[in-house]
Length: 609
Image 1 (spheres, rainbow, N blue to C red):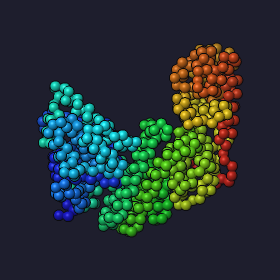
Image 2 (cartoon, rainbow, N blue to C red):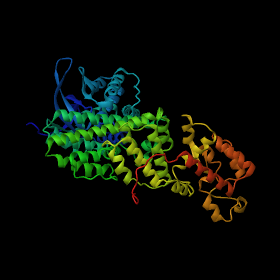
Image 3 (spheres, one colour):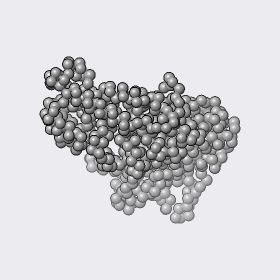
Image 4 (cartoon, rainbow, N blue to C red):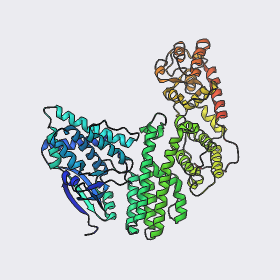
C-alpha cells in the first residue's frame, strides 16, 4: 500500500543484510561523542550480562527506487536513512572494531560480510563530509593499516569512536570475568533488535522523524527546521522533488559549513573563544538567530507575513514564533510557500558560509583577528558582522567602525542596547540597505551610547572584572613599545592575567602610599591605574606581596611594559598619585586609539535601548 508506514522489530542481521542504507548528503555529519558511546556500550553490556533481548531504538528508512548489483549480479535495494543516521554510523564503527578484534578467525570475516560489505556492496553509506573518510576508514580496517587522519572534527569523532570500541573490546577480552568477544558478536546477531520504519511516502517519513523518540543526541532546532520545511513542501507542494532536493542540498551545505567553522575555531591559529568556550554555549542553533536578524524583515515585507520583526528573538522563538506561523500562513499558496522556503534556506546557507568565511579570514585579515580573538566580539554584535559579510560590505573601514561600536557601547558601557541598531541596520541588510547607510547607522548608534563623555566616566570606574580590561591594557602596553603585535603574540596575550599593582589584601600602612584611609585605598585599587598584565605562571608569585617582591616578578615578564613597571617599582615605589597618573594615561590612550569614526551619522531617537 503506497505511503503505508511499516514498523518492524528486526534484528541487526536483518537490518544490515536486507538492503543498502544510504545516509543522504543533507543529513548532518557525524556528531556523536563519548556522551552517546558510553550509554550505547552500557546497553550492549547489560543485555549480554542478562541474556535478554535488547531494544536499541528506532530507524526510519525511505524507499528510493534505487538498486545496487553485487558481484554475482544480485539486486540489493537502496533505502534513504531519514532518521537514525547517528546510531547506524556508530554501529558501523562497532562492526569495524569487532572485525579488527577477530580478523584472524572465521567469525571475523562473518562480521565483515554480514554487516560491512558483501560481494562488493557496502551495507552502510555515509553522506556529506563523512562520505570519503568513512570509506577510507573501512579500507584501512579491512587492510590492517593505520587509521587515516582528517582535519575535520566530525571525521575525528568517527576515528575516536572506533578507537573507543577497540579499547572496550580489548578490555573485555583481557579480563577472565568478562564475556568473550565471540559471545559479544553472538549477542549482537541474535538478541539485539531495532524498530525499523519503512515508507515510500516522504511526508510520512519526515513526520515520523519529527515524532519518534531517538535515544541519541537530541534533535537541534536546526534539525527540526529542516524537517519542518521538508514536511510543508511535501504536504503542500505535492512532493515537488526538485524543490525538496534544493532544500536537502542547502541543509547539507549548512551542516558542512558549521562543522568547518567549529573545526577551524578549535585550532590555535583560528581560536575564537565565543565559538568554542563552553561557557558561551554557542551552537548551530545560533545560525537560526543570525538568519532571522539578517532576512526576517525582508521575508516579512516580501511575502506579506503577519509577524512583525522582533530584535530580541532567540533561536527557539525564531522556530516557534516566526518560522512555524509563516509556513502555516502560506500553506494554501503553494508557489508562494515554495519561494519562501527556498529563500529562507538559501539565506540560512549564506549565513553559515559567512560565519565560516569570517573565521577563515582571521589568518589573512589582522583586523578580523583583533576583533574576534583579541577583543572578543560581543554576542549581540555577531548578527551585524555576519550579515554585512553576506553582502560583501565587511571592509577594514566597516570593521573598524564595528570594533569601536563593540568596545565603547557593549563592553565599556556594560549594557546591551540594540533595539534601534537591529531595527535600523541589522534587519535591513538583506533588503538592500546601502553600505553608507549601514555605516552611518553604526556611527550614530556609537555616538548615542558610547560618547566620549560616557566613555570617560565608565573607564574611570572600578573596572577590574570587566572582560575588555586585558585587551585595553595589552594595546596600551604594545603601543608604548611602538610595535605591532606579531601573530605569535596572541599566545602571549592568552596567557596574561590582570594583576593588581597594589594588592587587594594589603599588608601596608595606607598613609605611606598617599591614601587618607582604608576606604580611600579600596575605592582606587580596582581602577585601570592600579592594573597591569602579567603572565599566569608569574601571577601567583606576585599576589599580595610587598612591592619589592612584586617588582622581581614583574621583571621576569615577557611583556616589556610590565618589566619596565617592575624596575620603576624598585626605584620609586607606587601610590595613589601613580594610580591617578596611569588612569589618566589609559583613558587618554583609549580615546585616541578608539575614536568614533568621523563622518555623517544617522540620528538615534532618545530613550531607545
